[in-house]
Image: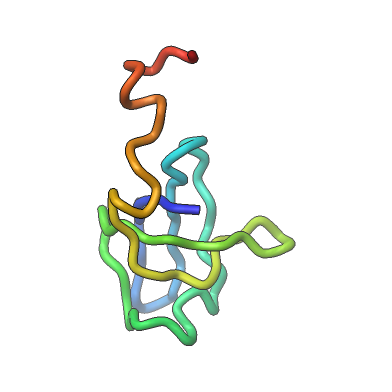
Length: 81
C-alpha cells in the first residue's frame, strides 16, 4: 500500500499513515521503521507500507507518485466511477 504520514512522534514511535486509495488511517506498528532506511518520518512524507495481522502499518519504505499512480478519487473529484 502507499500513503502519507499524517502524524509521527519520534520520541514514542507513535504515528499514523493515511492510505492513498481508501483514505483509511492506520496506526504505525512500533517496529514499523526497523530494517528500513528511515530513522524517523515526517508529516506529509509519502511511504509504501504493509499491514500486519492487527491492521497496523509496518515495513515502511520510500513512496512516490510513480509507484501507485494518482488514486481514482482524486481524478474523479471524489465521485465513484
